[in-house]
Length: 92
Image (tube, rainbow, N blue to C red; front, top):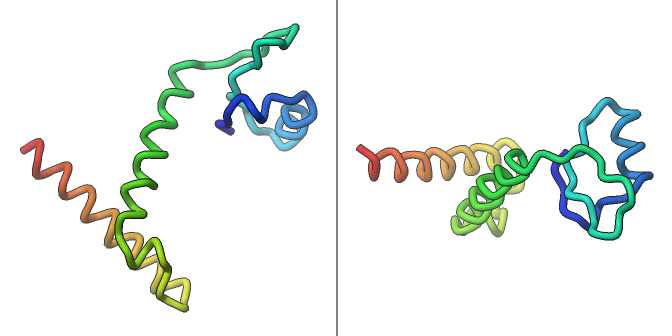
């Protein structure tokens, strides 16, 4: 699980460990023992956050006009393909 410094608590890390998940949370500056933290993996969260930001630019996705989950998922997939095509066309 990737999270911000606000989620750096021993009980959150223990809960994730019990579920078999790896917590990649940057340690707070006042923490005595520093757990393992991958800066490279944490930097990759920017890609995910920017993708969701671009996805919300599509009005039909941001406002969720569709009542059915299947229709909403189809709109998210169409918007994702459109974003992918923009990137692919600009690099070709």
